[in-house]
Length: 378
Image 1 (spheres, one colour):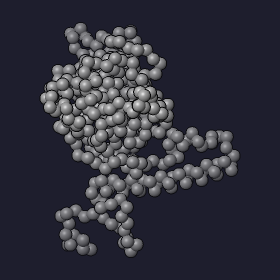
Image 2 (cartoon, one colour):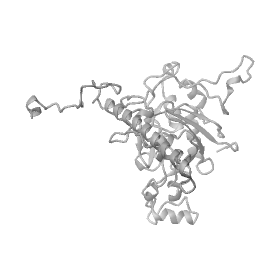
Image 3 (cartoon, one colour):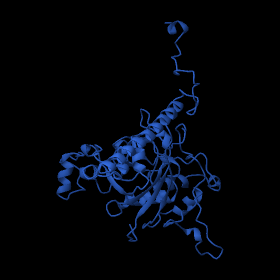
Image 4 (cartoon, one colour):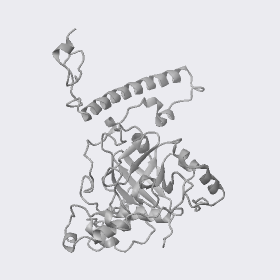
């Protein structure tokens, strides 16, 4: 595998709640990193759902179907488009999308740098996912840890820790050929920048019993800051079939002024859809800050750092701190009331989150459909 060396090997992941810069583990997991970068270049992640959030642990994404059962490698994606009839390939948009399950190259082998318990215990670790913990089923899906002490390190057996300490990362088999691990977590990268607190916001998402947020949180697009790998065979045709157009250029072929945006290279134009054509789950309202669990602002990490040290503050500083905490708490309580109203609207218990009861009404409640007039008599 030919790699063009560069000090920057990162991607910019744009989500509903802001942007993440992720440094890819090119050295430790080159095959996984190449697969990910080429899927990004093909705009495979555009407007896909963050379909599962486990608060305090991780969030899962990268499945265009939106339920955790879909996705494929870049090679499987190329194969699926190649198998289409020639008449279909000439269309500007292909619907329904090709079936990726027909490709024998749908998944990659589970070869890469295996994360140890210390690494898994960190916030912002990006992990290539095997489907259902089945070996050699790595496609497009990945997860990102949302906090430290997330519990994933408890699933790494002691045997692997001993192998890691002995420098034997590739030997994952016991004497009988069995697998020593209950879970295998392969490194894909690490979140390098999260200036908009995206991971903290994901940690506060309202989710149903399956872990899917009640309000849709999406990967809007991913930009390749640098791709050190050569394109696989069929990549040029794949981009054309998927409607990924090159960035605009001037008539003389020179780069336009738009070729650099906030320090990042201009991205090719993405396919124009609000949700992937492969998506099978029901669409929900779009997420924003009102659809998150509200916490007291003064106990957030970013706000704690702005407060003075209790041991050093004088009486006047203490009074200002208490006033600030009270004001922030009141503001976040209002946001929490709004969040609850939005939640009730999503569940169908309120016609609108903005609805207000008349001033002469003490309270409003939704009765069980089986309730009758006799049940309400005192």
